[in-house]
Length: 470
Image (cartoon, rainbow, N blue to C red; front, top):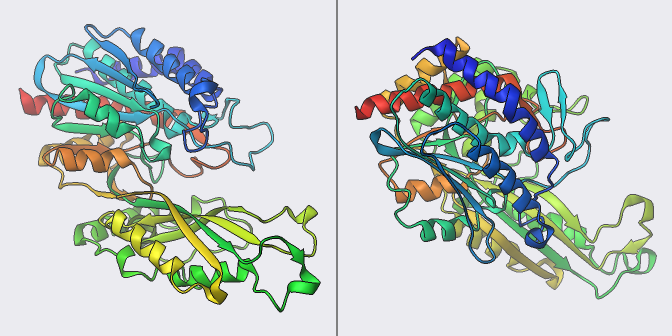
């Protein structure tokens, strides 16, 4: 295989074909079903799926079959099947649904209008993770162009990942044995610690999302008449949250939210911290003067990959400051997002959180916690020697630096599903969500040059996988 020819083919496809299609994709507000209950009638998910399917069909890959799978009431599934010259199967995963707009975009930037600036494509969804199917198929096509024999490659792109992959199990059941048992899974929905080398994700945290509701009155009352007699809903919420979290250091208190950190994952965190140093915290858009919860980069990496955390991500019942009168609020609701350790039992955690919050409510207030879903995390099986060597070699060949292995603080539900279904499968999980790329928040961007290089790394790993079969 001619590496320079491979890289040139990948860059050409990105420059002449992918970027324009990704810009069109950014313009489509195909929010995940959790955030757009009317997704089907709105038609945005259909438009995004059709855009990607049409692009795939136009690629010069002999024998490829592109299929949009549909089930009643479920988001579509894009399936691309590339026949192989060798036995076996590789599954390449991505998703096309998006997070909501969010606020705080810089002047000239926005979620639904793509802007290419200084080598970065800004807009919602390009990095998380609309680029995945484009990169995956381009990596395969570049190898096919040089007649490199490969195993069968199946590209699976779902449309409900940002909602916890709620529609994916039904699609997998409908597919039956159509995918087969992949010996390698490639996932392009993860993070990278910098844009200088290849990053391999070794674990994913789980996620528990729910709504905490506290009601103390039937209606709002003048605060001068009611305060001091009725407890405020906000104070009750504060008390309830201290049952889950130490408010000083953020430590989660329930045994059901804890997990033992394996020695190899701790060692990987230490090695990653050695590479990143202050950039572990420096990747975040800090307000002036604000400091991280620790000055130790190893602790910060472990906190964000192997420890449970709690975030309040939304609220109902609080009026905007400009229209807030002197009224004791009758009811408040807060959306809670708990990240769970990779090996934590998500269902057990959900039960424990609900029981803890609803037990013995202060002042007899009406308290209810409704879980919107609990997704387990995932801890990768030990890398086969060929894959570990391949990832390292790809990083050195393409970036000129060693690969780094690290846990990821987010959740990819499909990995847990696959891990249970195919316990002998090897996983190569990586991505482009690096410093300031800000998926889910304002100013999300795709680092174009890094993504071209990552595409080439995928090609090299696929070629190495094929050599294990021949």
